[in-house]
Length: 124
Ligand code: HEC
Ligand code: HEC
Ligand code: HEC
Ligand code: HEC
Image 1: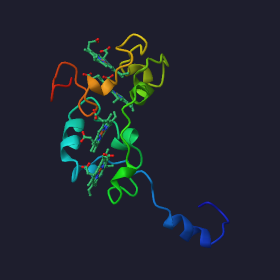
Image 2 (image 1 turned 90 degrees about the horizontal axis):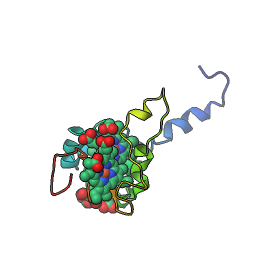
Image 3 (image 1 turned 90 degrees about the vertical axis):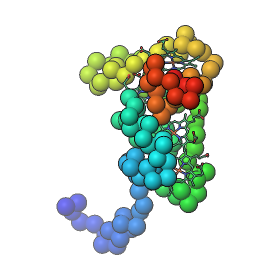
Image 4 (image 1 turned 180 degrees about the horizontal axis):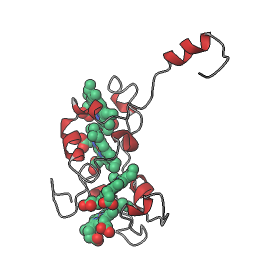
């Protein structure tokens, strides 16, 4: 379907391993607690890998997945952007200069269960 191409190129592409699993089920067997709380929360539509990076070579090398607690990690989605058509404006936004500046978001919000008002392990 892609027209003329070097025959050996097909094998080369078949050998390429996908970096992203794009599937939270993939994490469930080993991180069932995180999976279950995420999937019952407003963050259920987010891939684990969106925050933790591609899972290729994990778990054979667990340090490959990183934990980013920076405010920037959350502000990718939660700084208010008024794009009218993309749906981006539907994600609740905060003003990072006014909303508890200098404190990591995960000190107050559980990233795997960011339900306001519902507390778990002391975190909102
Ligand atoms: C076959 C088991 C297995 C699967 C599947 C798996 N993990 Fe892990 N993961 C581990 C082990 C083992 C560790 C290291 C011990 C620990 O922290 O629990 C780990 C550690 C982690 C850590 C902490 C790394 C650190 O530096 O402390 C994160 C984050 C993580 N996994 C996320 C994921 C995500 C996201 C997925 C799905 C895309 C996933 N894991 C799939 C077994 C697994
Ligand atoms: C919105 C971003 C985000 C998503 C989505 C997310 N995580 Fe996390 N995860 C974090 C952050 C931030 C931390 C560090 C939390 C802390 O230490 O307060 C963390 C910590 C972890 C840890 C190690 C520390 C611990 O508490 O045991 C594991 C394992 C983990 N996440 C697995 C997962 C899995 C599996 C999924 C999907 C089912 C997932 N995460 C989805 C942001 C996220
Ligand atoms: C990939 C985009 C994305 C990232 C990254 C992300 N969020 Fe969210 N977040 C959402 C969406 C989508 C919702 C559900 C719609 C809403 O409530 O605005 C949501 C909801 C929330 C809510 C409201 C929960 C409720 O009760 O309605 C909080 C609080 C929250 N997120 C905190 C965080 C924190 C803290 C981080 C960083 C660890 C983070 N988010 C990272 C997309 C994201
Ligand atoms: C000191 C604790 C604390 C920190 C740190 C914190 N928050 Fe919050 N956040 C709250 C509380 C309490 C509320 C609910 C009351 C309110 O709206 O102020 C809230 C509300 C929210 C809401 C919902 C707003 C709405 O319109 O409904 C979002 C989204 C959110 N926070 C995201 C974040 C993000 C992203 C960060 C990091 C950049 C962060 N928070 C840091 C305590 C905190």
